[in-house]
Image 1 (cartoon, one colour):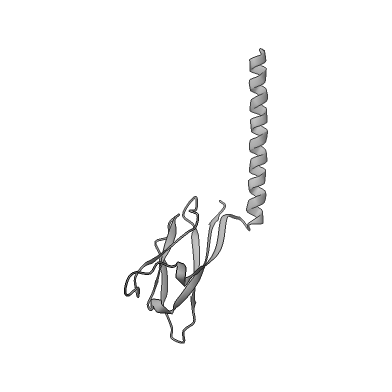
Image 2 (spheres, helix red, strand yellow):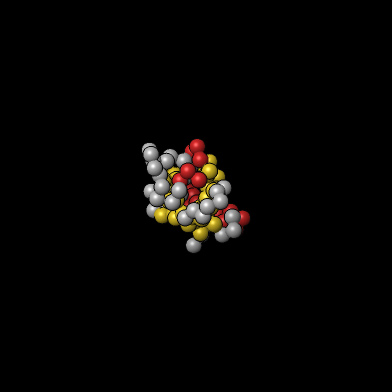
Length: 121
């Protein structure tokens, strides 16, 4: 066996060991996140929400993620509304870049909390 062949075997062995350690680190990080590969909890205040000009009632309002996800996440949204009247809200169009919300009376919206995550498969 030549010196070059021995060196290649050595490099391959080191690379395999690094991959094994990387997989172990990812597994530990995933376990620490409760089985979630990516996870974020964010409060978005009203001033950061881009409403439509005029009336934003019953229209999609886009909420972008600060940093895109690697794949389409699951999203849980809670609207910050302090209003004695019942308000209807809905979430849709979830992508790696963000999601849309709708509310039947947008002036009541003070902000929103969201959780977004990707489950490690």
